[in-house]
Length: 80
Image 1 (cartoon, rainbow, N blue to C red):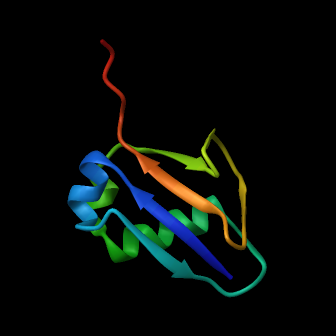
Image 2 (image 1 turned 30 degrees about the vertical axis):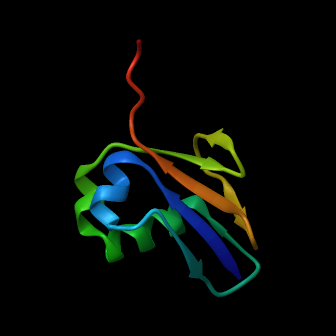
């Protein structure tokens, strides 16, 4: 399966990318598995605060990720 990752703000600075396509075995995985892969590929993300959105919907907790989902990594938002 494949998912598209989109990076914003400080997260994009750490990955040095705005987006990428990542492949996983199987038909669905958990968001934790995605995060584990990200931390393996970009260790500096372990020290960064960010949240996830899947298909433009903010996500919290344990969530399944499906083939062709788009996952955004969002840094903290500032008020104003």
